Image (tube, rainbow, N blue to C red):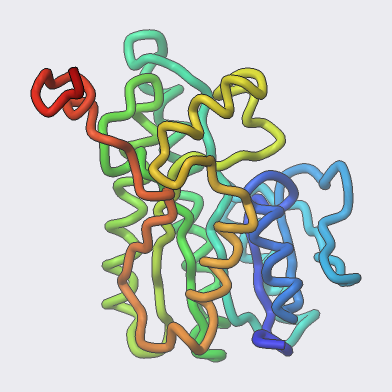
Length: 254
């Protein structure tokens, strides 16, 4: 298969988008290690192959370094790091102290920097790649998740700078995600009717599936993307229809 013999780490790979990414890499033949603070509720597997799990707090630099040393020691190499771990509760800026918002930035920006730096020696040796999992929240206003949006904006810029500093040994790219249907989608969009209504606002008519993200990540990690670095690939189904088109009174059928 396309990634036979490659070793991939997916942070936050035990559920949701991360698990979908891990399954796509497994299906492509890679050996996959997923990490999170807690073990998955069910095994992450695809095509009869299973991802290994290691517990780690990505906000602890010493633990992160130990984790990557252990991965390289066990597998002998590291070819790709997917910085997927992240997220945020809904919280308006005025409803939380700066320290609470700073924790969101720590998880979504500082932790990917920590993991990338820890993985760098092994990625350089393998001439591997980093895939950052960004968000459209980093490119548009994000009321209720402002710290998250700011962190994702910083993550995309960090990836571009890393791509320049680490070339030609390590490629660094970003996937900029729109809305994804996961097992937690109901917390964001409501029941099935709500999810369908939200999906209808996307030009392609649905929310992304985790596998859609996974296939894009596999592409960026593969030899097919050998000349792609410092890029941001939009995985958002065409984005959002501009609100003014529906608000305008011209060009309407009478």
